[in-house]
Length: 367
Ligand SMILES: Nc1ncnc2c1ncn2[C@@H]1O[C@H](COP(=O)(O)OP(=O)(O)OP(=O)(O)O)[C@@H](O)[C@H]1O
Ligand SMILES: [Mg+2]
Image (cartoon, rainbow, N blue to C red; front, side, top):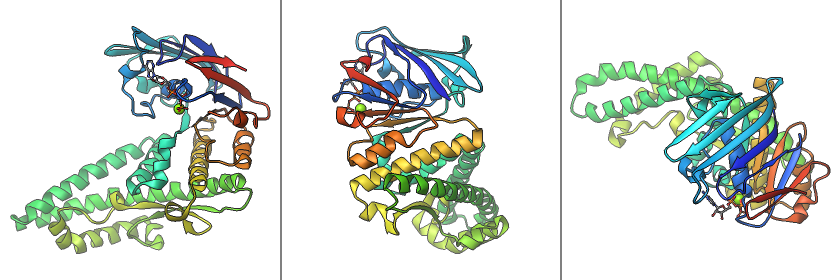
């Protein structure tokens, strides 16, 4: 997938204009608060997702403007297509190839985009919930039915937790609990097995990129940690049976805690470099490099699943990386269209080929 042209009018601080990116690496540089992230965000919205900054639609409209109008021409599914999103106070209009769509969701899958923004570092720095969120949304991109499995699991979990509270007063509920636990184990086992499968593939691919970024010095390993052994997890039926047994065994304690102590909502993804935990022992640059490797690996897995190369947006990734790591990133992640924002002209100069854009006060100029 390739973005050929992006037009913006009334979008945040961006002055009315357009860009024609190149097919490989595009570097957007400029001082702080000039509009670099705004430009990447405008592109990202064509993925059909909400802003990666968690912004509301009304925030996209430039101060004092009536509306924000975004248009893109892109190459996908072996043809040139176009899309338009117009944000107006309280409403938005979406068009795909000139045809009005009732929701921005209709753009999903048309232009696949993977984004890295500094907030993604929370995947390393914060707790397991952030890592589960990353894995889950990555799986959803290539297996749309995973989101149904996950939401069914969450519903069943809420049910079990509700019954746990009532069991104190109504012991006759224990037969019903048996049935809920069996269902919970079936869905929970599916979630676990899909996450393990994805994590293994992500690990192999991310390891390759991380070795490249670190000039062969660092071996990144990503693994799924859960309350069941690898052997049990490798067989669906064994996992479901062991899961049911563990739920029954923990029921007494779970009643005391009022929560379910085992299952994918408690699992974690372990990130290690050369066998050391990245969160506890990794340097800033190592953590940033690892998350980047995971993001590029995510793009590669989308490519394998959909046979289309997604677009990669890297917001502010070059800071904290030394010149050799920067050079690798700028020049060795070819075969796909990439947009990288940075503040330093010196970083931009490490780009061999590709295209440079300079941003000042919302004006974007091809250099
Ligand atoms: N709706 C809006 N209308 C006008 N200006 C806006 C709007 N939303 C954000 N801005 C302004 O856009 C400016 C540029 O923001 P942006 O996040 O793109 O900066 P940046 O170039 O990525 O900077 P940094 O290097 O610090 O990340 C900000 O100063 C912000 O005040
Ligand atoms: Mg920014």
